[in-house]
Image (cartoon, rainbow, N blue to C red; front, side, top):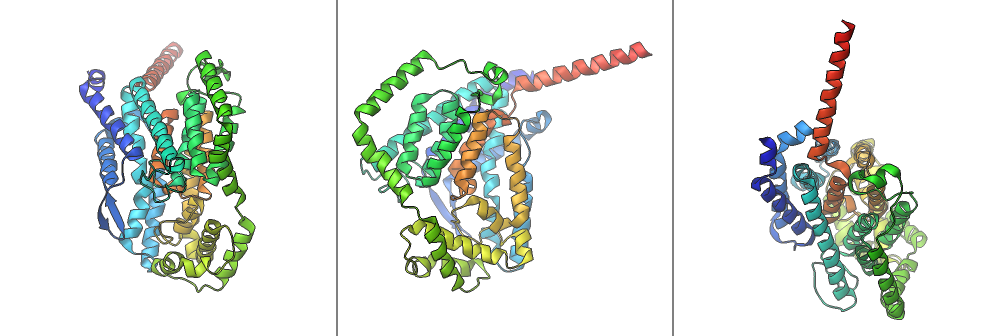
Length: 461
């Protein structure tokens, strides 16, 4: 009876609603509705609320069948403790800090919502989610091409006229999302979509994303296998690849020939600008310039004081005070060193951090943001969560996590909406969410083992 209900119209409508919600989160406009506590309430918050309500409504199934892996709870608890400590010390305002602390959990609701519909009808939902991700890939590449190559003002980013941003909040988001999707499509041999993803990375001109996607694809290529979705199937069991489909080979040959014909144009419009931006990076001189400015900067005690120096007065603080040709690195390193100085100045801050929201909207490094906001406790909590991500997953998802962590060294990816929605979706597809067949097989095997144990006990008696 329960199985019939799970596969009925209600189940299908729930799956459709979840996939539509996920698609909106990845390509829909970011509509700001009202300002709240220095932040803003957006339409996407209500979409996330819907996914959260859907997950809570079906939480009984999640718990009974253990559909998801734990890990986010500790991150939330540590963040709330950091909010309490920082508020008590007067370093942050309670409401903005609380909103910042809840962001990782907001994005996490994608995972249980998708896990529920995957459990009910995995094959149908996987096809729908793959269509969603393919749509996201193609739309982002197409819009980025219009922005970067056609100089068309379209999309949601103010940087879209200088670098490709697609339908994301900025070039860094496009680069990160495209790197994640490149891992998925490469492992599943969707070569056209791989090329679209790589083109998006190039058009974003995100230097760290270029490095991240190269590392990730090399991991998949030299891992000895390309595990299928969820780590199941003959390739995952044997460790061998059956080889590419002939049609895929023909498609790739046509694309390669086209690339050769258009070589000079592609080189001038895509490759050379990306390489030039990478070569303009001057980490050593930028770090030294930022260090000299931080040494002259007074200590900051509150988030308001930090905002005044690191955001409102950034031109006077660093841009006009250094001769570095790499302005973005100079600003990033100035903020890093200033936050590092304040965090390490007090043992309480080392343990609990300066508090969520203290560094403001941009640290340009999610790994450091974790330490600055929640201290060593936050580093441990996030480390355990990443460990959960990497347990028993196919190589392609491990490579995607590596690309995420590489990008998080210089971008706030772990606290960005669209990259984290993609991560939680891929985690569910990679085996972080269990199907009904798996739970049924486990229940059957448990019953068989219990029956065998009882039979052996009777024989002994």
